[in-house]
Structure formats: structure tokens, C-alpha cells
Image 1 (cartoon, rainbow, N blue to C red):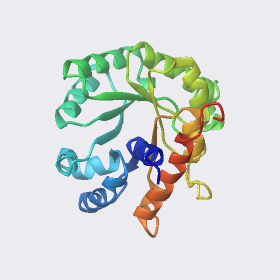
Image 2 (tube, rainbow, N blue to C red):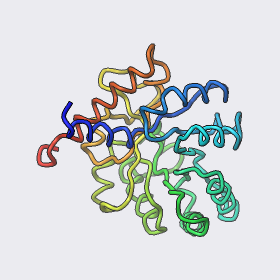
Image 3 (cartoon, one colour):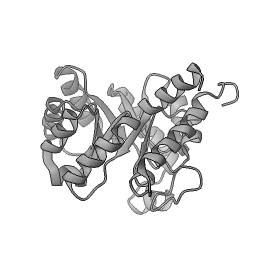
Image 4 (cartoon, one colour):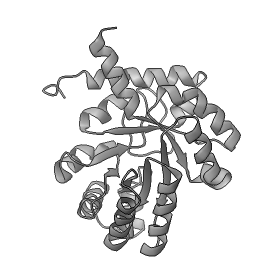
Length: 250
């Protein structure tokens, strides 16, 4: 492999986040140790955090992993402020919260992250990738997912957050709205030819990166694979292909 290819592969690794969606903290620790060398970050979601608590984060950090703490905070500003402080003290790299929590909540959260030293990057969730236009209408939003995601993206940008969580189907438009400085993190990533499961707005790794995503979150395609390491390597190859594509072609 050429040095350029190796560089693109390492860049792909830094951008890949593996979701540790396992039933037990013990299994999550084992799989995190196994898959960790092939990804840039390990995601601890709500289920695992409830089961393992802050200790699971400490254990994974002790293994040398960066942590994406995906709690999707949505509460009054004071409560979220304190939760952000706690996450920062655990040493996590990314923490998610819902942009729909409103400007006051977002501003307080960002102020707290900065007060805690600025190493914690807050990512605002716009519209969950499991929701489509019909779902949004049923909960009272008249806008389609893309328009709603753009509205919430601007709210997060105004509050000074580091980035956003959004569907790959909205990334290109959101990038045009918020500019180049915000990190765009895309869940619902499915390798070419894989089952989409319960996700409704998905993309493959190559298309997501070419659309403007900075970080890709992958869970089940690695977790449920017969050979998780081989699955992770396959995703990295798809990502490398996108990163090696000249921007004019993208």
C-alpha cells in the first residue's frame, strides 16, 4: 500500500466510531478492546451507560479509547449543565444532547463544557435517523426531516456547539447552512449491501463522507458480523475510497 493509501486509511480510522451496543458491560469491555484498534472512538449509549454507569467509561478510557458518550441529553438547562460537567470529568471526547432542548439549554451546556477545560465536544442531535416525515407530523412538527434538521442545526451553531448529529441524507444541505467549522456526525451508516434494520434515513460509508460527514457511527454491521474485525476493516476500506476521491469528483 502506498503512503498516501496508508494515510487515508488512518484518517478513515480516526473518523470511525463503533457503537458498543452490548447487553453487558463485560462484553462491551471485551469487544471494545478487540475493535478499538480499528476505530477512532467507542460509543457508549444509553443502555450500556445505565447498565455499567460511569465505571464502564473509566474502564474503556483505561484501555486507551476515546469515548463518544451518547446520552442525548434533553432536560432543563440546570440539569444538563451539571450532566455536562460530570461527563467532562469522566474524560469523554464527545457528548450528545438534543438540539430541540432549546437555546437556553444549549448555551448553558456549551458554557459548562468550556468552563471544564474545553476538551469535551458537544454534538447536538437534530432529527433522529429512525424518524421520517410521517413520524415528525405525528409528534407535531410540520416541517419535513431535512427542514427540521436545518433549523435545529442553526440553533446549535448559534449556541457555539462543536458539532451536530444528523442523517447522511441531510449532511450536504446542513454543511451548506452551518459552514465548514462544525463537526457533522452521521449515525445510521450501513455498508454497501447490508440490512438497514430499523433505520429509515441511512447511507453507506463512502456516500456519507462524500456528502460532508466528518464522523461515522457504526454499530450493528460490526457488532453482529460473523467476524467483527473483518467487518470493521471492510468499512474502513469503503471510507478510504471516499477520502482518496478528488473533491472535484465528490
